[in-house]
Length: 297
Image 1: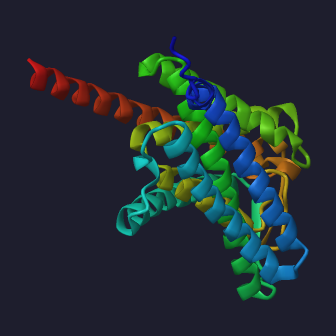
Image 2: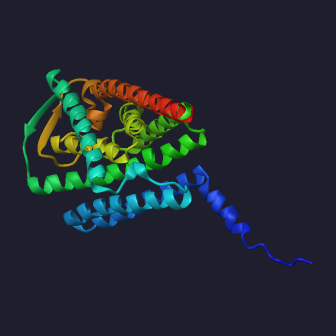
């Protein structure tokens, strides 16, 4: 009679459960948000230096959590978040360039149309720049790891990958991103829709095009940093900048109290840019597929 006890069943079931995309998505989101919330809260209680360090520490720990969740639970490598300095810097700088061009064009058009008056009025510029840069880099890292890192890729895998999976992931993460910003000061139904269309779709398209989270983080961070330094509310949050921007005219042009994201100008520009990125992603996917077919023929 064989009396051997199977001691591997329960751990195997647990591993299979944690390896399910829905499981590692939820674990990753909760862990990243929780760690960032603790770092931000502790940092803000320690003044300016604490705020800066807390934001940056939250971003660093979020990166480590993301890589741990993906390698240990999802069972995959993380080429989309390389730690090779040159490759990471190249992606982040390209994203920063796209973000700067996007915000510069959006703000410039609103100024030309009479919607914004921007007055240079720096107060303690070194402190202002340090806080705006650190806080917005930390926020961009956390938000992109949650939405385009964990959630996007989990939904994509749950949907079976391919064009259908990518489309579903893009639509759902954009909708969730817009919904999350409905909790911000001054938010309206329109601002939530606008955030989903411009930021959610644009960052999702940028990720599909590049498969590089550093690029998306650079785009997101630069977007928010420039708004903050110009004195424009960032999704309803207005802090000290190097300039003071006063809005004139209808909110559909200026974004009103919510800030630039609720203006129709960046919505239109982002959809044009997103369409170009999605076309580029489709061409790259077709070229890759043709290469695979040629290799296996």
